[in-house]
Every structure is written in C-alpha cells, then in structure tokens.
Length: 401
Length: 64
Image 1 (tube, rainbow over the protein chains, first blue to last red):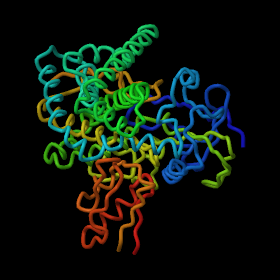
Image 2 (cartoon, chains in turn brown, red):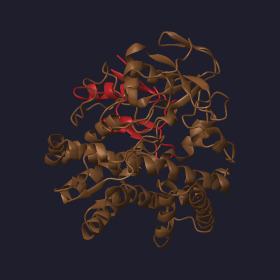
Image 3 (cartoon, each protein chain N blue to C red):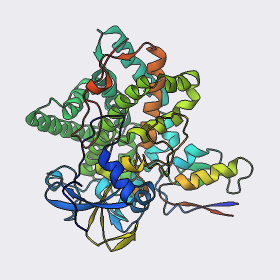
Image 4 (cartoon, chains in turn cyan, blue):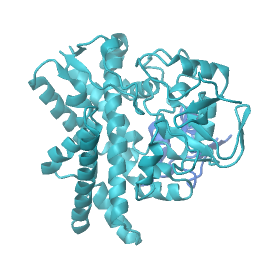
C-alpha cells in the first residue's frame, strides 16, 4: 500500500477541544495506516487503542532513534541526536533500557513521590501568592505552568535555593517560543555546564536528593560515571518540564471551559486524581515519544509491518477511540478511565508519571480553591496554541480574576 | 484467585499501587512490584483485575 498525498504527518492541532479530522478518518478506516512523514519517508500510523498498546508493549518494536527508518515528526530530529554523546534512556531497547531504568526507578515510586507532596504544595502556593500580588491580567503560562515543574525539578535534583533564579531563567529560555535559536543554544550550554558543576559538587558532598543518592548508589555498585549523571539530570529536566507545563495550561482552560465539570472536583477534591487522568486522556499532548521501528516482520491489525519499517503510535487518536472511551470528545472528569496511553505504554511508559500526576492534582485543587473567580481573558479560539510543536500546549493563557 | 507478578517484566510505573495500595507496593531499591496480598477477595478482586489491565508491562496476571 502506498501513502496518499492526503495522509501526511504531522497534522496540526489547531483547537484543544477537537481532534484533527484526519485522525478520525484514519481510525475509522483501519487500525494501521500508511502515511508520509517529513523527509520524504513513509511510516505506519497506529490510531486505535488496542493496536497502540500492542505495539508499545511488544519488544519486536525498537525505540532506537539511530535506526535508519526511525520516524521523526520533525525534520532534523535525527541530526539533533547524532550530536548526543550518549544514548538517552528514551532511545534504548532491552536489556540495556531495563537496566538503566531500574537504576533510577526507586526515585519515582508512588511513595517516594508522595513524600514530595508538602514541598510541591508550598511551591504552588508561593507562585499563586505572587500571581495574586501581581498585575491583572497575567499570563498563567509564565506565572504558573512553567515555574511549577521548573521548581519541582530543582527540588528533585537538589539545586540549591540560591541557584533557583539562574536555573529557572535558563530552563525558561530553553522552552519559551520567542527565544532565538542562538539564545536557546546558549541556554542549553549554560544549563549543561551548570548541571556538570552541580554533579561535581554532589560528588564531593552527596546530599539527600536524587543526584546525591544516585552518586552514592552507583559508586557502591562500581558503575559511577560523571557524564551519565549529567545526562540523567538533563533528561529529567527536559522530560519533566514542558510536558507538565502544557498539561497545567490545557487542564486549566479545560476546567475553565467546563464549569459544571469543575464543580465536581471543587465539591470533592478526593475526585481530582481521577479527574487528572481524564485531562491527560483528553489532551494527550505527547506523540513524538511513541514512535518505533519493527525489528522483524510483525502481523498486527490486519497488516504486516515489515522489519525496518517505522510506526507512529498516535496516543491522541488512541485515547479518543470510541470503542474504548464512550463519547471521547466529552471531557468527563468522573469517567474513571485510567487505561489511556497519554504516558505511553510498555517498558518506556513515562518514568515521571506519578510526579506529573501529583503536580497536576495539587495545581488544579489549589488554583481553583484560591482563585475561584479565575477566567480566561481571551475566547478559546483566540488563545495561541502550539499547533506546530511536537508537544501540544498553549503559548500563552492570559487570565484575570 | 491468585495474583502472579513477574518482577523481571515490571517497569515500575506504579500504576498497580495507585489502583490498590492494599494489594501492591514497590521496592524502594528498584521500584519493581511487591504483591502485599496475592489472594484478594471481596471488593479487592475488581481492583486486582483493574491493576492487571492497566499494567504497562504485562507483569501482572491472575490465576483464576
């Protein structure tokens, strides 16, 4: 089968509240679809929930970004990787991947993350204090969505308080749309340099935080490596920042636009954790991370994916599969559906998912409790969305109260 | 019913613990699953099924 001109990825997401028409058509027609991707290549797209989970859970599909047919949604994706000194965890396969993941898994258990709750609550309260003390209207992205994950990562990595401003300015520059290519590169280099210094300081004095504990553990095991530790710090910084920020912005607009739904969690904060699952399903912001390459011929969804062919698993389409989620276009905070694939599925499922869940839970509970009159300044169709980005989100969310 | 956990397959996502902390915990060392009660009854049976369905690594199964 040949991809037609019409079936081309990526597809722009122009509205946070509706799925691109192409996704709906692909999903209705077949489980697997052949599409064109950037760079004049072709790949398979999996748009239904069942096959999405099968592919992501099947070891015959590789995550290795260096394989020739690895399907990147942005041109130049491979070029960025070839500069990398070491393969990141996200691009590893078994058994290497499982070993790397287990080294840090203990830091992300439900219990370990729960222990961070009081500090994260303090961070969120502090930012809302500043928001309320500042001028109206304010950009929620700048005042809350971006600084929450940034400060949580400071906490996680053990960035000293005095360095928070330096760290945050550069992580913001890395992510902000208006940053020039040159400034972004500079911010990235400065952060890497900063993290290298931070790792060196913790080698001398291993403090009780993720980096300190990892240094002690790996030294005991005899496999400590300075560069690997910087790589880990950078991965956690990048993976945990824009993703969480975008979900804060989108979740907020989702709750503002659905006051009846919002009332259910305002009346009973015990429901917020499940509400977060629904927001994750509804907005499914990450798609580039769930690309794979078949390492052998695999029969799936009525087709044969041949060895060497690339597959894009469209979590967003899978999470709106009406055979699995009834009326998927409805934001239903009491749906109770936890089998979405917003964090991916299989061995690579998001390492920081429980930290993300807690950040979102605390933000939504605290924001609407403390700022009950919060409202968007712009109508939804005028809020600037990241339609061209590999991680969907809002560029700005001007609010008043 | 008996819950079988394959720690070799487990990827430590913690979804089982979120589903039912009375049945599951995670190792502090490497985050992999620890089954606290492998023969659930009553309401816990449904929770065990949900945990199996949601597990991203197919590390959990049920012996009926």
